[in-house]
Length: 130
Figure 1 (cartoon, helix red, strand yellow):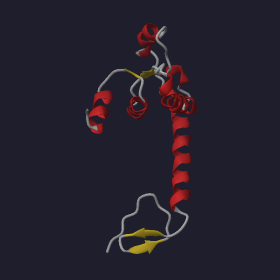
Figure 2: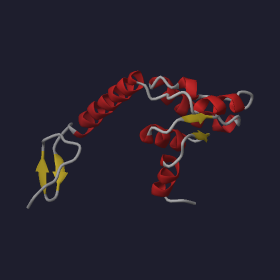
Figure 3: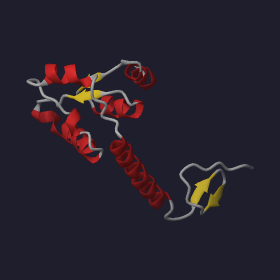
């Protein structure tokens, strides 16, 4: 097994990645490393596939999904096509804003206990000085 930071380092140093994992896709996106997602054909893996496919659909990256028959051709084209366009960046920003709003709604529903006192200011990260 490798540590998460090592796994991220492996991906961030590559010119391109072919993966069947959710985390491989996420790190490729975060590091802006061109990638292909090869869904696992096992029926028991359908949930794992679905969450990756939903993410790629939300970000406009369904073109990064491949299959065994197309894999060789898609790999050959991978280095020529950058999936991280301005449109992608806009969609990613929209998803981050939605996530931030959801988090703030969840933690903003009442006083937060922080370091020996309550603070009713909804914030995701908050330091308390004593």
